[in-house]
Length: 242
Image (tube, rainbow, N blue to C red; front, side, top):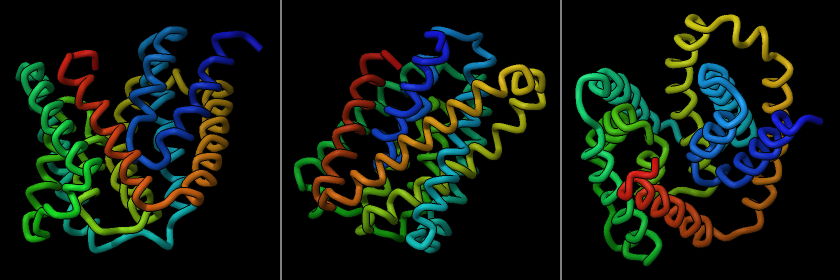
């Protein structure tokens, strides 16, 4: 198998396995790998479709754990915020916002990792603010998943509910953007159907591997893992690597 296919396949498996729990990161890891071997249009569209397909798989695996209440209070406003943020992105410089967002993520991640998050929970009555801002900042700087997961840690929910709820919100965002990509680049999927199929299958295998790991760890370890990943993304944003 050629290296330009083998490496993206391995990256899809590993990124799906590592990011099942976090609710973000698959696209962040997979897109740069694809950009090494493929044109930017191919990379963006293939990764977007794999991202959506993988989230749909997670929804099916954890469907009975979906928290409708959180989706009502948080998910819809995330989508509205994302639309506004994406619109503003082309009109404003996002570099300063990325640094500010990075600092916020570092704080939120450390808050959970140190256990302070158990003592300081945001009241549910301001969920609409958290939902809207997470979408707004995510659409503006392109790191919506990390913001969403940081806010979801505020809820006292199970591991499975966290994964399912994050996947459903991410899927809604994907469904809004992928048709635009496909309409503009219809021939990309036609010419790269086999690559898409193999990469998606590899990501699915990674998700199943991640699910087995999820079942073996405690809720405390789960939260620390997510918090650590949020801090890492925060640091990368602050020093302007992503």
